[in-house]
Amino acid sequence: MTLNPDIMKAIERLNYRVTVGDVAAQAGLEINLAQQGLLALASDAGGHLQVAGSGEIVYLFPHNFRAILRNKYLRLRLKEWWDRVWRVLFYIIRISFGIILLVSILIIVTAIIMIILAANASSQNNDRRSSGGNMNLPRIWFSPDFFYIFYPDYYSRRYQSSKQRSYDSREQSSMNFLESVFSFLFGDGNPNADLEERRWTAIGTVIRNHKGAVIAEQIAPYLDDVGRGDSFVDENYMLPVLSRFNGRPEVSPEGDIVYHFPELQTTATRQGYQSVSAYLKEFPWRFSQASSGQILMAIGLGGANLIGALVLGSLLADGTIALQMGGFVAFVQSIYWLLLGYGAAFLAIPLIRYLWIQWRNRTINHRNEKRQERAIFLNQANEQLQAKLSYAQQFAAETVIQAEDLIYTTQRDLTEQELEQADQIDAEWQRRLNQGQ
Image (cartoon, rainbow, N blue to C red):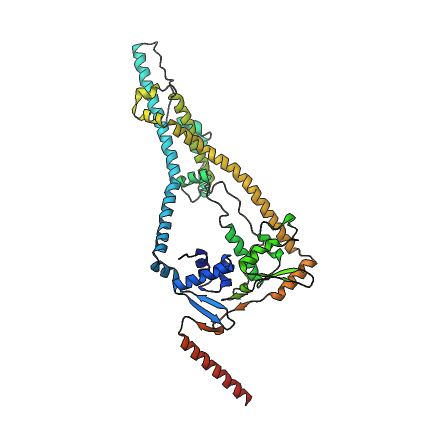
């Protein structure tokens, strides 16, 4: 069994009573795919079919159909279990980069301190033996504020006013620092991951708002490739829309083409006009959703990590210190290139990603401008466009299947329904006979 989550979401949004056209428009699915998915879901989840006198079919689902499916299928239960587990695993992965950064800094600082203390101790011994003794290691002054050099505004930040602190607290994001490190490195995902879903949902909504009859210019603001120069002369870009929603072209006496979608003209519930944007707008990529303070802290720690690795490398350059000290310092020397590589990549990856985002957003803005231009062209319709819109209205219609329109439903016994229909027919004939008398 293959369940389509988009169909299930659409059913819930439409209050569990839907037609194929309702689901196709709501989820932006192909008509045939929506029909197959509804039939399979109705069979597995205990749904019911309601048939109107016109032959249209309404699908009715219990409000707890997800629970029914969970109890019926182990695969669905395992998928929901894995979704919960993956959320935990992904959170661990996200915070691991921040933990690695802090561990790397701790290792580097500890190794530097140990080397400096050993050098100072050796220097003191040499001074006692001989006033002219020299150390191979440089004497480096160290204090608790040694790393202030990595923060140019260290003291100003340390003694900032309470007003500034309250401003910074309002600026903080909802993510913690460990999560912000991952966000700084890799961002927060594609903001347009659901672009195709939004595109087809918007197109389905536009068609439903115009009662199943539209012209190409009404759909063009939601598409990307509309032909050379966006001239609208070649309307081949409408073919995928016709295929997805089982539409058909209609030609006016003047030779204009309008598009008619009969299956989107039938609904189980009157929905009225649905709000939809004038054109499909792609969202720009953001470098990070972390606050500016968190980003600056990540940059500062990354810089401290890289500079610390370079300082450590200069201390370990001759290779004799690790041999003399052994233990932890020898271990650090064995992973030194890993520490240095992580420190360099920690700053290089966000820089490359920042440059890539700038290029990507320029292309997104260009596409948004093109789609917006088509929406403006539609709003400023000329006489020819007005004529096409008027001709399309001849095919506009909406059929709402209500309870009194039903002639059959799988919720009740067929014989009982046939008897009721016979009684209704007899009552209607009796009413007409009484009126004739």
